[in-house]
Picture: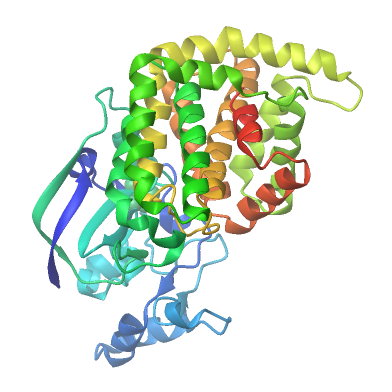
Length: 415
Ligand code: SF4
């Protein structure tokens, strides 16, 4: 174990795995857990005969092609039973590795989940994923603005999901030297309570397009000036004129997003997610036999009747979701999709737009939206869509082909 200085959101301290009481236990979701090399070798060396046999039977070497840098992390996989449950899970949904031979035998994935760790210049940064419903509750149901705190002594002994060297990294033409200034600005904008979340994301879209221009033209040292100017435009209201001056495509956003949501099915097969999509389609009366104007009218009515009032009261849920994503995915420098800040933000905004749109249709189907529904949808969405890199890459390609991978397209998604 190494002792790190760490930056973590306040909500982390309130999280505790609820194991057997969990409605979506992560060990029973059909995920083949990745086992790191260190633990795979530890399993081989165990003296206890019964456990030696179990490890031999249920932990198998990963023979798929894995990038060299990840070989040790994805060294082996845990076998699932016929119901898609981890082979080490007991009848009463408890981990038998932990209860019978101790947590030192838990591999990296099991020890960390639902935590995600990155390393920025040697400072560990940790957040929870909303794939875990209990983590989603602790993180999203908090009315107070999400806050972060530095801890001086955080023990951590694993590899990181992502390592950022702000001064050595040549990616983004060196813009990472302003990593903290940009990230703090992004989180501040996402928490601007006097604007709707749609408008906050519009401001970020405008900012990131300007940032991309500076990065492309190697004007890295004018980034602080861009930050100052944008803050000043927000403070004096000038940002509204900038937003109003952007000509957004006039096509119907519903049709494009609906196409993307339905396109999910090529990549996403999680049954709970498919159930939500089906509720969404029924809610807006989507059918090939119904003319588009009627579907659109239903959608607008449902938004006004269900989602709008819900957001007025519980807007902090989606705000917290976006702040957490921005923090843990190092937006706009996340390396999951590309090394282009605009595409990173596009990916970020697209997820939000899909969730909002699904909620609008589901609200009409269920005749109401509750915080519990939103937490569950976000958890299912994270497992199904957010974890599918292929889907997000393909969705971005689809929008690019429609000519929507630009500032106007981004704002169009937020309409
Ligand atoms: S999903 Fe979260 S609360 Fe549920 S069992 Fe896994 S870690 Fe525990």
